[in-house]
Image 1 (spheres, each protein chain N blue to C red):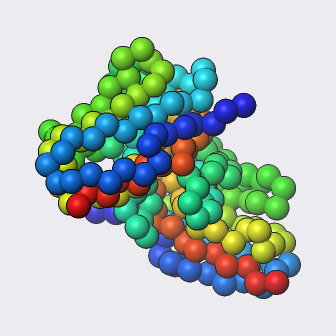
Image 2 (cartoon, each protein chain N blue to C red):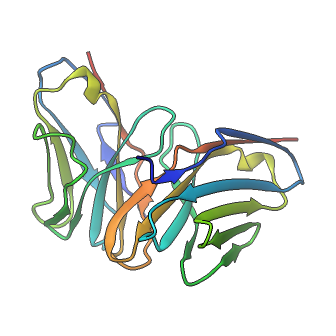
Length: 112
Length: 115
């Protein structure tokens, strides 16, 4: 039973355009959500997070949106750059317990 | 400052041997986590510690897997009598605290291959 799902294995975007990566979850106990970026041969790098008391969090070119009623979150990257090409993982956790549950990842390719 | 480090980065072992994977968390981080990641998948939780106390080991697949963090800093994940299905990337992460809104920082991982 996969509690966190990223249904798009890959996404291809032109440089300068918006990239939208999506994530769905099923466990209503999750109240903290994170996005990680991973380059080949490296560990996942923390990108941005959001708690369930918010519906949006912005950090530079990266914005995460949370729709609690739909149990859906998305990561927007604007404008996309070739250096953003990586695998993006969505993670979810609860403030009362430590572990994170991750989706399968989405490979983002930004073309120059 | 230094990030999470793991050693060895690569480990090839024969089926039936025991292996020990080491994780050195970010200095001052209270919580330490172990995950396993199969190719094309996200990290899957194994176990985590607050200081030296193992808080949750619900993700350990069976009793061949064990972990310790005796002094609340470095941790070792041990796999006894390895099997081919244990082959995976093993990742360690640390965070300032185990509860609340704290991001986890990952190490580079140990690629384990069981032949």
